[in-house]
Length: 129
Figure 1: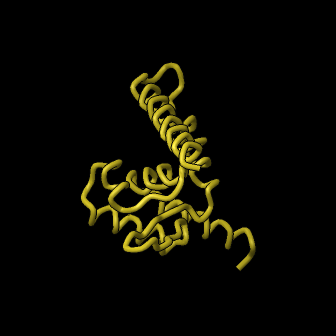
Figure 2: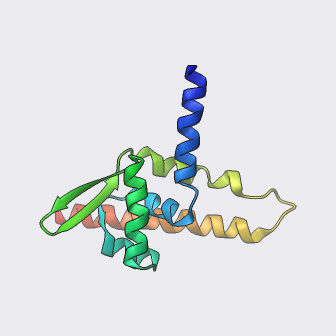
């Protein structure tokens, strides 16, 4: 298989894996550091079993890694740049000026929320370290 076709295939598989809103949210939430299933469940507001299923898929495609800490399993991004790539892609979905402001404001709120979450985790880490 030519190198371009191989790369295109791998990118298509990654995009397919990321093609669910919950999995995108998990990736973005993990950009601030490791989280357990219960923390993700609280953040995302979905059942623990659903979180676990999405995590399993992300792990099987090597987008996240896990680490055991006693009885807890902590998940982290295999490649932290993936979350930044997704957040940087938000402007690509925002309509131009002639279209709805609803998506624009939702996109801005998502960027703000995800940025605030990152700052809170960094502040906690500096206080405990």
